[in-house]
Every structure is written in structure tokens, then in C-alpha cells.
Length: 96
Length: 432
Image (tube, rainbow over all chains, first blue to last red; front, top):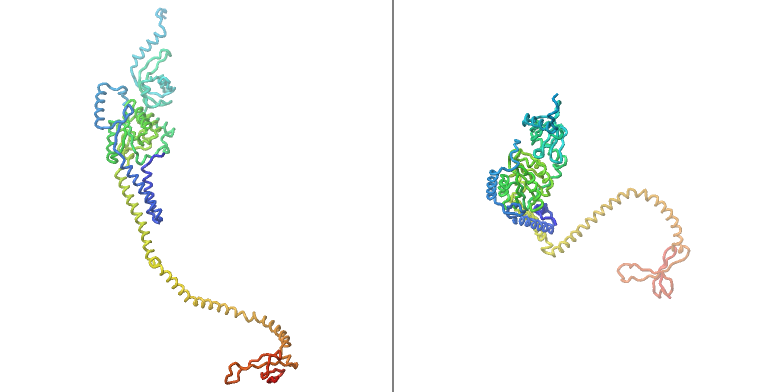
């Protein structure tokens, strides 16, 4: 099944609005267009509303862990210290 | 010629030569044109440097050759750094090159140009390959260093635009030896996991050397192979890398990449609110028009007073009836006009007919003459009629009604008779 896309619903809303705004729709069609537009619009809002903030980082083992920028900086500092103690290989080929 | 008492082996001699050469020529730079270039399976690179007057065999061993970023091509003007040595088995001296640089152009620039040309030939930069970015990805993947400035910038911008975004960071080193493979690996991992809908691949600004991984083939291949659309975001605006050329979209900076992959939530919400308003207004407009039409219909007499319609029809009939004579008059007038037109032509038309008719009438009149009773009377016959008294005898002479007698039984004594002769009449009374 094709994945539900926000932009498809948005396009459906826009189409309904255009239909209605063009006027001269029979009542049945106008109501159908309105209903369709509202339905698609509601889906858009639901998709937007369902979004939840989540920042994760992929770990070596292939699992996701919540990402904490501060913690990550600390890890980096430690790594830097470790690097100073023992220079990484391949460093300093001195081309530039 | 000294006696052959101190005989050297080839190996001994070669080694002595080698020693002399190696001590006599410390590491040095030498320039020349590359020829007989051979990349050996072992990873070693063999070639010659030559100029108009001489040729120098060169070898670059695997370790150094692997660090070479550009491809050594035939005829390329090069500068090599290394030391002179002897290849004992071949009995030949050679330069053991540790570094190679193109002459007149930076090695990295040359490497960039070569990679660009190669991938371009393969069509990897073809605009037709570029895929559109999803409008609103459910999740965004970021391939970069978890500690870099790029990630901080991206997170800041996304937090401002779409605070509730779902993000997955695929960490990798973005510079130094092996970084290219790590970046490529992270891109592949993101594709294999398929938990995001778009990828940002990049890093913050730095020197050309710092950004180099993004010019390397593994990264270019991984981006080209990625099923997920890729936004590249490497360094600053002025830095164009191979990754930028292969990516579906190039962001000038990591911050811009964040803006490209996610819309502003506030804008979307405003858009939806505006659309909802327009839907309502439009429908209300349509309903209002319909309501107005219904109101107009309700106001018509038919619906207000059904009998009125009947009355109106009657009135119309009366009206028609009144106008009917007028119409007939019109027709008459038209007919008259036609007749007038005809009458002009009539005399001529009738003349012939009249003449014809007169002759025929003349003939018929002769025959009619014979049948006329007056002619019979003239021959001595008479016709007798019984006079009947007027039913209502008035003051004057009442007009007598006469009946032709065909039988004596038709009369009785006393009846008045009237006999018509060839000339004149006789009045008589029945005696018997």
C-alpha cells in the first residue's frame, strides 16, 4: 500500500477549495467537495499533530538511543584527550 | 689490470653501488613527465619520469600510493619526492617516490577534477537523477559527526522550524583517514534501516583537506546508490564537493539543509487554517446563492397561492381571446392585400375564360330553350295550378300560393284554379 502523504491530503484540500470557489456547483457536488476537503484537512492536522519530537542516534550495535547534544560533547572531549595521548594513525602525512 | 684476486659477486657490487647512491643522494625532489604508468595489483605504483634528455625509473610503494589522491596519468607533469635506490634483481637504479604532486596544480585540485570528470562520464551528476525531497518527511536522517558544528546548526534550525520533528543521527567521522568509508557506511546503514525519509549528509566548514572525504569516491557512490533522497551540506557556500554534485539537492550550509528538508510548522498550520476558512466561506457562498434562489421561488405566486396560477391562466386565455380578432384582422388585411395583388392580374386571366364560358353558355342556352315549359305552352299546352288561399287573410291581396295540378283528385269543387297558357293566364273555379 502506498504510504499516506501529508502533501497528498493538502493537495486534496486545495482541490476542494478551488472547486468550491469556482462557484456554480450543484448543491450535491458542493457538499461532497466540502466534505472531502474537510476530511483531507483534518487528516493534515492529524498528521501534523501526531508528530512528536524525538532525536535519536544510531549506536554501533544498530540500536537507537535518545540523542543528548551535551552528553555527546563530553564524549568527544574524552575522545580528544585519548587522541592526544596516542596520535591516530595516518595523521600528519604533511601534504599541506 | 690487477690480478683477479679480489673478485666481487654481482650482488656484492650491486650492494656497494646501492650504498653509494643512497648515501650520495639524500631525499630530493625531482620533476618530469610520467610515462609507462602501471598500477600493480599489489598496490605499488610503477612509472618513469622523463624529460628531453633522460628517463628515471620510479616506484611508489603501496603505503604511499594509497595516500595518493589523484590518478597518475601518462604524460602528466609531476614533481616527485623520494630517494634514489637500486633494484638489485633488475640491476637498475630507481627513485623510490614517497610523494607525488602534479606540477602547476594542487594535488587535491587535480584529484577533484579527475573524480568529477570520471563520475560525470558515468552520468552521476545528471539532473534527471535528482529526486524531489519529500514535502513533510516523517523522519529526517542526519549523516554527520555527532559532535560537529553542522549537527548543532541543523538541530537548532529544525527546533525553530519544526520543533516536533523526528530525527535520527547516523554518526560518522567526517574528516581524516577512513572518514569517507564511514560516511558511505552511515548512508548505507540509513538506507538499510529505512526509518527516515530523507538524509542530510554533511559537515561544517573547514580547509579543503578537512572536507576531503566528501570528494572521495565511496561517498559519491553511496549517495548515488541511496534510495533516500540526499541533501548535501558540506562546509560553506564556496566549498563545492563531489558529494554536492551527486546529491539530490545541495544545501549551501548545514543550516540551509535543515530548512530544505522540513517546512515551517507554523506556516503549515497557518496554511491549513486559511484553507479551512476558504472551504467554509466558499460553501457558505454557494449555500447563500441557493438560499436566495429558494427565497425567490418561494416569493413567486405559484407557491404562495396555487389558485392564483389558475386565475392567471384564465386571465391569459381572456387576454388571448381579446387579442384574437386583432390577429384575425391582421390576417384579413394580409388576405386583402393578396387579393388586391391578384385582382390586378385577374382581368387578363379571366378574359379568356369568359370568352370560353360565353360560347358554352350560348350553346347551352339554345338547348335550355327547348326544355323551357314556356316553349311547351307556346305549342298549345297549358299548365293548371290550384290557388291556395293565404293562411292568414290580410287587408291587401294576399300572395296566392299555386300548386301545379297533376290529377283531378287534387282539387275539389270551389277551388280556384289558375291556368297558364302560352300567352297570359286564366283564373277559374272548379265546378265539378
